[in-house]
Image (tube, rainbow, N blue to C red; front, side, top):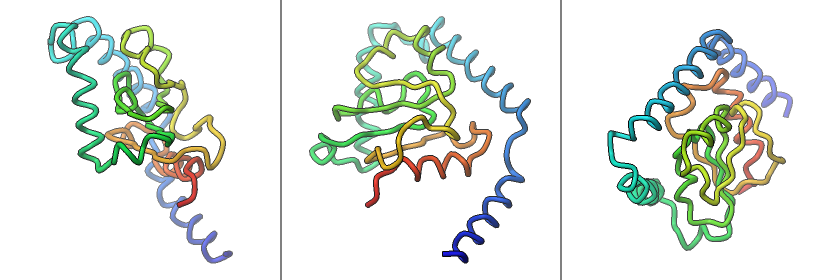
Amino acid sequence: MLTRLRNWRRQKAALDTHAVPQERWRQAQEYEENYWVRMAREGYFRMPKPLFESWHPMVQAWNLWGLGFDYEQMQDKVLLEVGCGPLGLVAAAPMPKAIGIDPLAAQYSKLFPLAAHPCQYLAAPGEAIPLAGDSVDLAVCINALDHMQDPFGTLCEIHRVLKPG
């Protein structure tokens, strides 16, 4: 156990040297929010809103299927998407409880009425997931670790909230 802890600390120390400086992270969050403000104003890929609202859930369902999720086995599971953005996989999750974590979740809910689907959005960084340990069955983090201030800390948090097995 002590050896494992030493190895973990060594790995974390090495990864901490790659942590994003606070100011750079803040600028990236601002850029991300501006991007989604533009998407809300101009339309996602310049699609008419009715077309997008019918198209988006189908695409996200296809993405879940492409990741290998078995819909029948997911029916009683809890899904967590870290760095979900306003229109993440949680929007199409076929399970009763889907949770999206994003530091900009409060801003996204003002921009996109689609954010009102049955999933739960929480405004929090991936490095501080506001869920109890061992409370999530499945976790996804797609195109988001590069947006985190501390990617290793985020992975540790994901590990903490995942149920064993």
